[in-house]
Amino acid sequence: MKPRSLAAPALRPFLASDAPALAAIFREAIEDLTGEDYSVAQQAAWAALADDEQAFGAKLARHLTLVATMAGAPVGFAALKEPDHLEMLYVHPAAAGQGVAKLLSDALEKLARARGAKRLTVDASDTARGFFEKRGFAGQHRNAVMRGDEWLGNTRMEKRLGEAG
Image 1 (cartoon, helix red, strand yellow):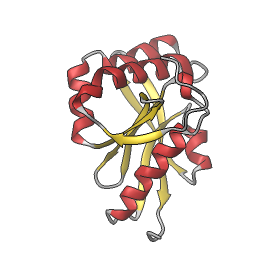
Image 2 (tube, rainbow, N blue to C red):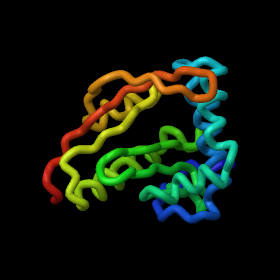
Image 3 (cartoon, one colour):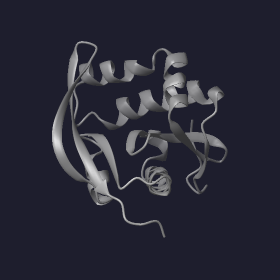
């Protein structure tokens, strides 16, 4: 998967047929982008959440999930768990730094605000924490979650949402 760097990212709703591609994006993002913050064993345990692509797709279908595409190919996704929690935000390593995560985050923030949310929360990985801080999120507390036989740390972050405008 090699998106064209000149193609502008676009958004569309999640389709059940997206599950295999999004599971691959999930795994590749974890394996390629989180190595400075998590051990190989932690990465493997985390990425294994997408091994059952049918269950992974069912989880995405339970939330408001948007898919980012470049040149027609999926390059990222994010899910809003009702009413005010950003459940996942993952971008393919080849599309990192091209505005995909910002586009997804902005869209879900607008949707949450339009649905009456006064705040938006996320359990940000150590790798993603800086991204969310730049977007106005503030750390609330640390979490430790068990994935397989591994403990992974993340930070609950919150952003207060203003009025829609």
